[in-house]
Length: 339
Image (cartoon, rainbow, N blue to C red):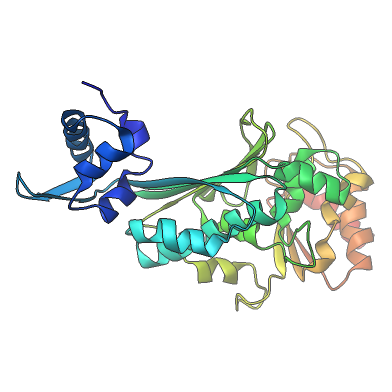
C-alpha cells in the first residue's frame, strides 16, 4: 500500500477540506494517484493530528479543517496581484481572531507586494499556517535579495547597514511608487520576524523590544521573510501605527528608533564621525528619533560630537532622544550637547 507523505498533504489539505468536504477521499485519490485504502489511512492520520475534523456517518463522512491549518502556494510574479491571492487562496481557509486576521492580512499583502515590485525575481512561494496558538507566514522569492537591493540603491557596502536603514523605516527603492512603510510595519506587528536574503539574516523578537539581532542565513538566492504572531496577542494594527506617530494619531510616520548595535558588529566600537553620519542618514525625514544604545558599552568623542552636536544643531527640527546609555555614554552625549 502506498503511504502518502503527511508533510506534503498538509500543504494543501486545509483548502481541500473546505472545498471538498463531502468528497475529500475521492479528491485526494484523484490528486495524488493513491489507492482508496492509502487515502483513507492518510485522512485518519490527519484527523488524529488535528489537521482535519471528521463528522457525519461512516458511509457519508464530512471533513473540515482542523485546529492546524496551512496553505502553501507558488506563483509567477508577472501580473500577480497580492489582494487577489489573499482573498481567493488564503483568507477563506483560516479562522483567526479578527484583530489578528487584520494584522496577518496587512503583513501578507505588504510582503507579497514587496516581492512583486522590488525583488526582480520571477516567482514567489507563500505559506500561511495556523496552529492553536500562532499564525505563521513565510514569503520567499527568487529575486536579487532585499539587502543587495538596498545596498545597490543607496550605495551601501554592508548588509548590516542595509538592515540599519530598514530598521529606521520609510526606506524604499522606489520612492515614486512606495513610502517605505510595508516591511517596517510588518516587522512591528509580529512577535517573531526574520529576514533572510542571500545568506544574510537578521531577526527581531517583540519581547526584546525593537532590537534587531544577527540570524543564521539561509543558503539560497532571494529573500525569505518569516513572521509569526500569537493568536492571543493584544497588539492591533492601529496601536502599532500610533506608536510611530508623534501625535499618536497613527496617520503620519514621523517617529523612528535607531538601533546602534546594527552600525557595527559585536566587539567593535562606535568611534568615528562616519559612523555617526551613517546613524543620522535620513533622520531629517522624521520629527523624533530615538537613538538606542542597548548593547553598546562605549562610544568615542567624535561619534558623540558628530551626532549630538553637529547633526543636532544642523537639524533642530529633529528631536534626538538617546536611550539605554551607560553613565559614561550619557556623560559624553551631554558634553557634546553642551559644547
